[in-house]
Length: 216
Length: 77
Image 1 (spheres, each protein chain N blue to C red):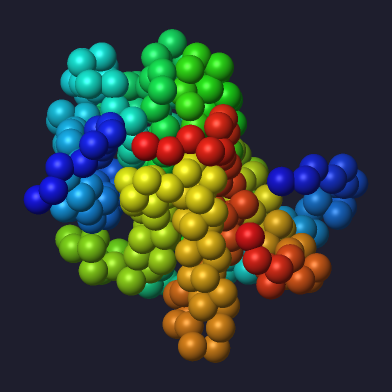
Image 2 (image 1 turned 180 degrees about the horizontal axis):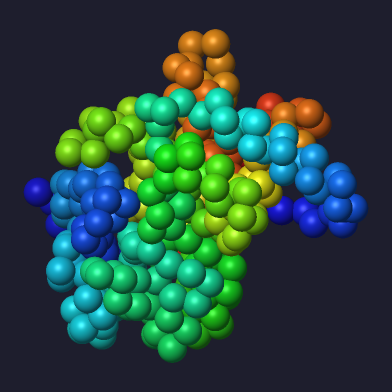
């Protein structure tokens, strides 16, 4: 494995209930990719997705890319058991953040940018996830969830490849849009066609704040 | 989402339209909005209540319909 020069990555992925389990499982491919590229990656999975662990790692390693999964609102992003781990007082200086959380792009994102976060990709409204109830024991095999989460992962994997925040934002939106168009087509299943409107909401709700040229 | 000020009758019609569209949501599908995991029936209940989730569902449905009608959905990101 070749060593990556230039920054580390931090992935936060609680798994205390169904939605976070989906986000956790689907984040695995991002971690695998980071590790293959030799990027020093800390994986705060499950109960480790706590404020204490998060702040400790950020302080010690100053990660370049922070990938947050978890429930959120306009003022906080949460970790395991919905403990707030990022809020308006958080110091994520120099990092590029992708928050797969509801509403954080509306008020929290701008605050973090003001406090030194280089760039923030997130959602200015609720992040919607479509899924099939008969796949909840194996979220990675859920073809509906895939349409939402696979392109969402591109926001991080693109940055891990050294591309800019703007490229990461654009690539993930374009991938979501490609899925969306397929979901509207005659080749789509009835579930896909119905879920398309939710993916359209995510596309419209994804925002990029801060320095669009920021890269790892 | 763009805010349009509507009279009560129009709002009620749009709400009924959204409920009709939700009514054809497949029973094999679920939606997760934040920490809520919702069936078709639960989405409809939120819409009828016009609570925070219901309001968002209405706005999302109407945004989609507007963008379908205008062709915005075919214009790319």
